[in-house]
Image (cartoon, rainbow, N blue to C red; front, side, top):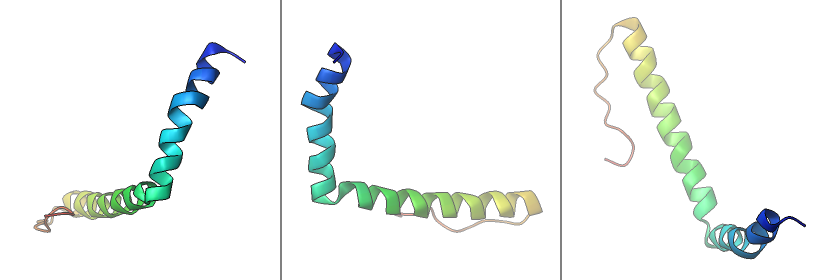
Length: 59
């Protein structure tokens, strides 16, 4: 096992697992999906030359 893999196994994986247990990963994925959808609507409006007044997610 390489030193890199040993460090990942020892320090990184436990943090990822703890975040999953707390629901942070799912919450972040949902937030990212909201931002991507908002940005897509913004870019569509811009491409069509229409005004886009919708506030970003979280505001």
